[in-house]
Amino acid sequence: MRFVLRRLLLFVVALLAISVAVFAMLRILPGDVAAVMAGVNSPPERVAQLRAELGLDRPLPVQYLDWCGALVRGDFGTSILTGRSITAQVGARAAVTFPLIILGLVIAMLIGIPLGCAAALARGRRSRAIYRLVSIIGGAIPALWGGMLLILLFGRGVGLLGVLPSQGFPTSGWGTPGAALASLALPALSVGVIVGASLMRYTRSALGEFIASGYIEMAMSCGMTRTQAVLHVGLRLAMPQMVSVVGLTFAEMITGVMVIENLFALPGLGTGLVTDVGNRDLIAVQGELFMLAAFFLLIGLVVDLAHRALDPRLKASADGNEVSA
Image 1 (cartoon, rainbow, N blue to C red):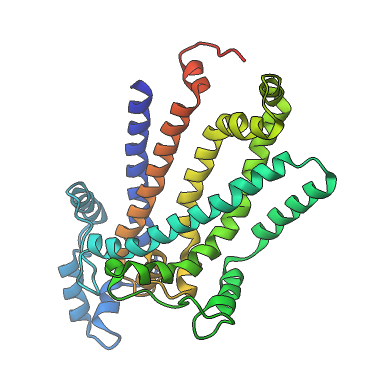
Image 2: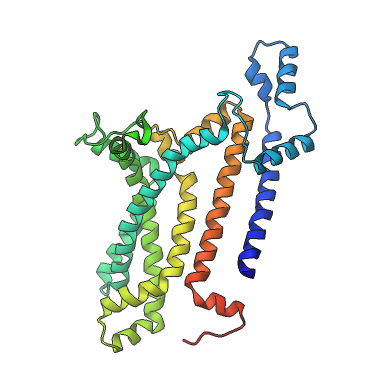
């Protein structure tokens, strides 16, 4: 309980620090939101009126405290340009981005973990070199280039096979789940191949440590084959590391899918954030950045707690005990 409380306190402190950083960073950017909204040829009186309506003429500490008070109430503000609630706006975009990330992560795990296990079990020099080459090539493929290749192969109307949509998202959203999943298939595959190569390297490295440590030989002495020992014992021992890697990879993919969303014209968080920055929608940008940063911190907190729950050595070291081999 003390460990959980310490992590929660650190989480709150980090949120406060991020709120200050986001608020200050957006205020030092060049340009004026009121001038953008008023238009190029608007008189100064109109710009001053808009600044007063938006509260931009008040002192910065007052603006920050008002914003923090709204955050505590769950109010992230209203978009200056669209007039929509930022919470609803981000929710609509997250309904595209998060399913894309989850699908990409599932594909990456289906690719990376089995290949990583196979690479760890490989004994011949040639087979190890082949697995190493596969992981290097998979990790070196740029997301943009890989996505374009998939469009040329499978994109409907432009690809050789033309079986999957390559642009846009259904206007009905997840009201038509089949069409929504089809529109995310190629983007998720573009992300999954690259992330899968990274998971393959992590899996091979983690299993390699346990193979060299003697745990596998101990399991084999109990009647298991080498493959059974690696899959049943090695994977279980490597689970805490894999949970950490998968959790942090999930968080990193939020920013990594921005290029993919733009390539496939998906109305996700990345595309929306780029649009709002270009339109100088200051209120929307600071709310979206704070939400993304809070999600990063939340993923880190969950991974930290899960790692501690899965690895008894961490609890034992914190309690001053020693764990026998």
